[in-house]
Length: 608
Image (cartoon, rainbow, N blue to C red; front, side, top):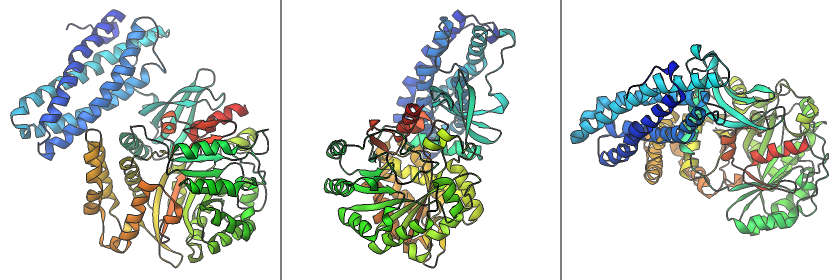
């Protein structure tokens, strides 16, 4: 095919080039990839592994080109303009994937001799793939960018190559919410100056960014891995039930903006419908302060009787009453998520409006003596209580606090009262920033270990087909019974387990059942150190909770789980992350929603 240079290409010529690529290179890949995949099923691993990875990457790559990029090019050539956020983002992402494809192509050429009689077919496919990528990079993409620039009124004679400004690297495209007007806008996760950012562009208010991590390459790798192993839809198993918008506190940071809206309490019929429709759920009774509901114990009993887990989220004021805690336990509360923003009373005043430490310590004492498992929800705000990350951990590790099975560090967010007042501008934190604080205050907790642990965690969830948010990450410590701990990295070889997770990810696209079947044996062979043997029974108990639903009262008391989490607000909302949100929501004002992240942003829009 005779093709003019990219910068002189007319819309008709660009259309013809795109149709040629689809009719030749794409058609060949669609025909040959599945045929060779089946034929090479018994090939040596040196060949099978890179080919499986290449096929998985190309299946996704071709889908994005055919459903997003090429329709946008045809629309542009037809005078309709590019769809969505234009051509630039999709083209940059395709170029990035071409680099990955070239690396795999090189590895496959070296291993092609192991293909036996299929060697010639494999090399022919790789030759065509090389021409395919080169044609797109040198002709199709620059021509499309030049044409789009001309359509937007730019100088097409000096049309730039499709590289990101300031050396940005595109991780993926998504949708977000404008931080000012809260409307749905194009967004992308990008690496800029070494940091991972969620970049949003509103036609009216321009570009805004949300820092995701100061460790851009590390975050990008985890982001890509997460979506590789969590690409399919999964049923929701965990629901927030917003029982009331009333509260006995007036927290300046209240996510629910309690006591300010004329919202009725949720009727019991809404919960009954949810309980009867699903099985084996976790029901989070919360928002704003559920202990103000006089029928709370009835709700708990019904949740328990229907075979679900009842979890109570509370500020703890009413739990200073021992008889009330006993009644909760007898009704069937399995776990309590207690607001506990550290041991600094001034921070409590800033975040919650009043001193609260005495009441919360009394609540924890009652929960311990009556035998209720606890998760501490520790809100951390920049320049407010950052030192409490380590302080709260050391508090939770004290021998008398073995009923505390989890510490959830929740970065302060711009939601509800905090967003409305504007008093906390610049003090919000994302989970990875809180992790930085913990690693600085507790040197035994290393970032790379936490990253490897989260690959393992996300892989386990994938194998069990459990929904979970990218913004919810974890680590595991083993108590020494004296107020100290050992990180799980001393018992498990996390780097080798993470490598096993990479192999799972490669297999899961083509053979999900085989990938799941091989996962646990692979973990046992490669990850256990001798120090893990005393922990083995309890580690197996933890593993079983992934399948049955995570109930804190079943977590062995020798362990302390750490969580680094956030609440989604208009600043950090990422539609792709939200689609896998690990919590649905039922509320009086928003009804039944499968994603709590979507519910948060929808609520903020109602507040405006």
